[in-house]
Length: 362
Figure (cartoon, rainbow, N blue to C red):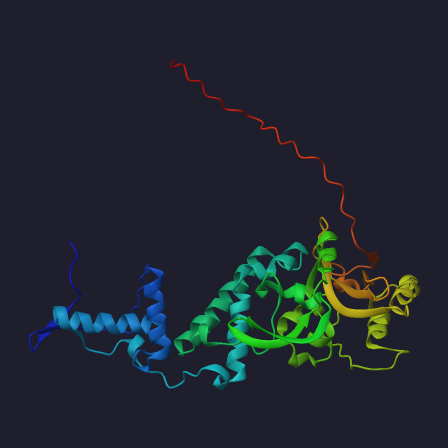
């Protein structure tokens, strides 16, 4: 039989002692519409705090006093207004970065490639995840809600939606379009209609890790970039590199990166493709290849469009980045092009199993 906690009778009501150091967890499963209402109240009605927990606690405390005459000798933590709570851009950069990094590091899936490369052990992943969760809980205890945070910079990788990388590798038109990304409406250049060369990436098992690395990373200083990009660039020793956009046709930023990362014996072949008068380099990405036991390696990919033939080639390369990078970088050069579809075999439409019925009635 369950018993009430210790209490005393005051003015005909039962008052319960609150121990601030004693915490408990309730798993509250409900219909989606109820959760949506609680979330709405938390975010739009300042009288309930800014979390679902505070809204539920508010109604529980009010209901217990009204229906049962139960009160508490101290205000419950969930109902205490915290002056440090800030939202949106008002949150200090250091707090935003700490929360975003902790949320990212708390996801064990983000360490999959490093684990495959032997750079980290399962025990170390568990330690990092636990440490990240401790940071999240500490910031939440101070009144910060992870749901209120907007990324400081663009983030990719595991945060990508299915079509994001396709837009990144597509040629862009002069027409603007409005799209919703992470709940925010942004204006960007529309992809050229009919450009389906992203299929070459899929057919050749080229997986984009860091799209358009100049715009998203290498044109920026180290501290200006999303840590995701720096972490991936670190695997090939490029995290400290910065490039300036240049119109010098003799030594473009593409040639600089080619000098930095392409094996010497293949540079001439790469330059012949890039410098073709009918060709444009429409993108530079960091990629990995979906090949057995090689997904831990990172490569640079120059996406070349031949205007005259309207064809595409992906020049993928990397050189020796030093002994300490041997598990994530290796000398490599290959030119990928459109994969011709194999002729389809005729489909046998005859069913493998037939079911028949007979009627013996006259």
